[in-house]
Image (cartoon, rainbow over all chains, first blue to last red; front, side, top):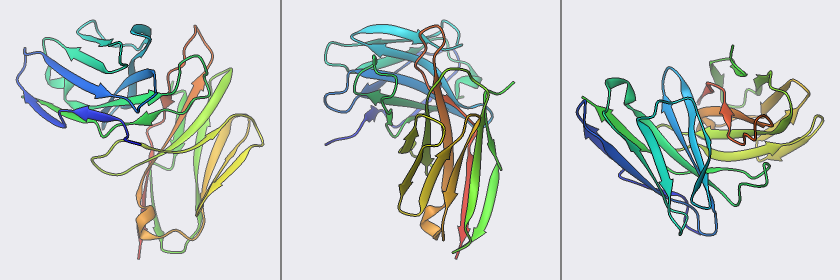
Length: 115
Length: 112
């Protein structure tokens, strides 16, 4: 069974630009979560999607947004990039959202560098 | 105040030297405590889920235990391939929240 896939794996942007990252969950998984990982803050929750609806959002500015499609694939968008947005962006999928005991399985991440 | 604290931040062990990593949490309404392993440049790899105090799970040289306020990841006779950052995360009830809240991790180095 294929794992969580994320594209692109690496991305370099300049301040003020916007970026879109993509995530394909494990087949059959319907919940997708996004996390930002930086050396200083560690892994921080961005948002979570289930059935094409955002169910939960972390403490990030409105420049960070996302969506989920009917096939459970998800995208996240960051507008007006800042230097501090440089990070590893991780996507994780779960079987369903309603069961809080479901494990989340992570993709390899997208390494975003903002110059 | 951090809700999940891991210690130590870094740990160097000789091959075969057993030790434990600690994860303490302050959240209420724990719905699960999760251990992950992360290698450089990769996403976290799921290891264990623990749900209630007293629960234990094992996988190869790793054993995870849970109490009401902390979890331990015991590594028995580690090998160099066990070198990685070990992450602890909790899921807890609160405003319908199901996201994982992570600690900063323990970077383990096992020296041959």
